Image (cartoon, rainbow, N blue to C red; front, top):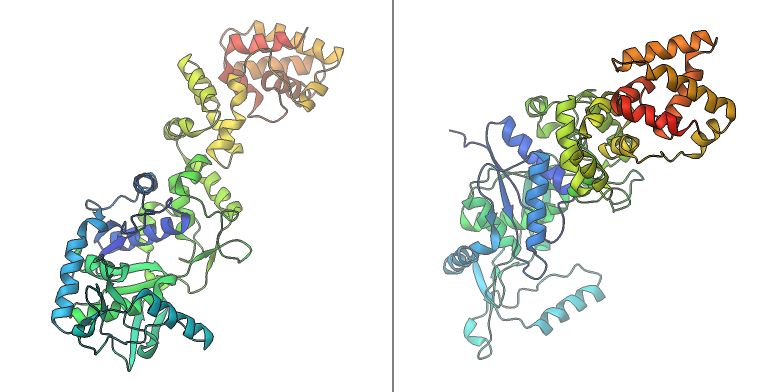
Length: 474
């Protein structure tokens, strides 16, 4: 009987949850969901100097925001150190590990000699067959794996294919350091085994680690999980992903106004394909996802494409859900107090009414809110250069005054009634409606770009609209 699929995401809490890690988590989550399995989280916090509680909290928050919460409580690797040492002792007792008393100076001499001879640094096995009784008095040993020295270790990778490593190039890796702390290689193997992980999906920078870890599995006579090593993400220029390309924390994408569903949709297509389909619901992703459709070439991160996808999700999102997303974002914005104060004054309805027009012109929530600032701007409304130029003539101020007078007679205030009044005005003056609408937009919003002017009138309401028009007639 085939074991249920169990995947895991195992970040090191030495910084934020970066975009590459988020994609790895997503692929693991989707694969588990596709196979009705379980997705687990492990925090690899054995680097005590660099691991921080802030980074751990950021990982939890980032995964929750993305909708990738695990199917069980997170496993903290450092807390399992006793179990790791127990396994190392078992390997020693079985003859699959040995005590190494090489000093730091000896190890540095080995590395220096390898560099001088143009070789990759590797341990020379000097304590592999020596009796520990030969060690200097009081010396504390490291435990090393007694790795095979001939033949090859083959990783049957679900993405990379069969990858062969000559065992002569893989030295006897350290399992326990001389201070008794377990190494990453041992801890990962023990934790994956104890967590029941059946499938390891991670970046292809771990391929060499896979070979070393496979040797530990073999020494322990444990089943090796299926492995899939996915290409890393590069920048749009093909260079290694950096902050200028988008190698930022997930929280940075939230603060830039991207939606979690849009970011998931974008990330799933970075290296994975399913025909020509561009937009996927979560259920469609789960149904279609497979490791066989992951390419071997590095994916390229493109902010323009991400903005295009996010704009699609903005336009498709129901206004009520969009308002929830906006309220969640506002506390993280530098100018968030503008909206917080406006909402406290009961002006939230202005934004609700303007949303249909605002979201048609925005790629992110930040852009949407930037375009919505006019709704809450204090009077007299500041005008940008183009709006000030348009309204700067006596004839235009006179036109605004006439519009103000007609609109003052509109009692049932909405987009339809205000448009009817302005159409009547334009026809009576033999003007095109746009010739009337654009100055109104400038007076109402302080700019020449906004949602439809009659939607603006409806969103601002009768009192505020008439007051803003009155300001521009003086």
